[in-house]
Length: 125
Image 1 (cartoon, helix red, strand yellow):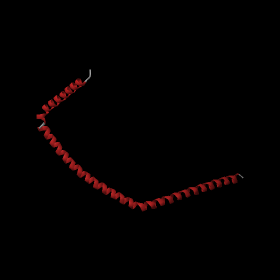
Image 2 (cartoon, helix red, strand yellow):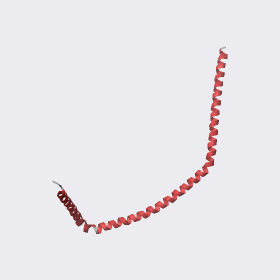
Image 3 (cartoon, helix red, strand yellow):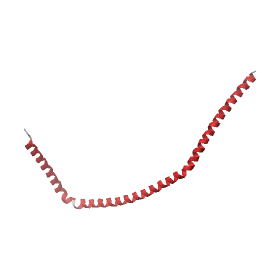
Image 4 (cartoon, helix red, strand yellow):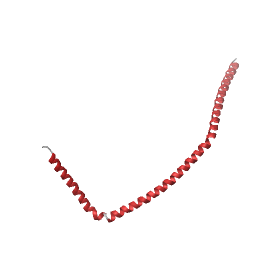
């Protein structure tokens, strides 16, 4: 009796294992079919994607060459401007720096004096 019960339990557990195994195998097969469909679509679209990437890469290369050329020209122009300002600073600045600053200070003082005079003149005290 106990041998029959244990054999029945073992048989039922094996049957449950077989049922779950079949369910998992079916899910795996379904996943494989979806992967095959995805792979098929990817294989169809991949040449177009690669050609788009090649076009983008070519455009980026051309753009980078143009930018490099423009930046080199800009660098040369800025270098010339820098040299010119250095020349101006070294030759002209010592001669006009001090008188120019004094003149600007005097103009500011005159402007303040005139504005105070006009404010006092127009005030209604």
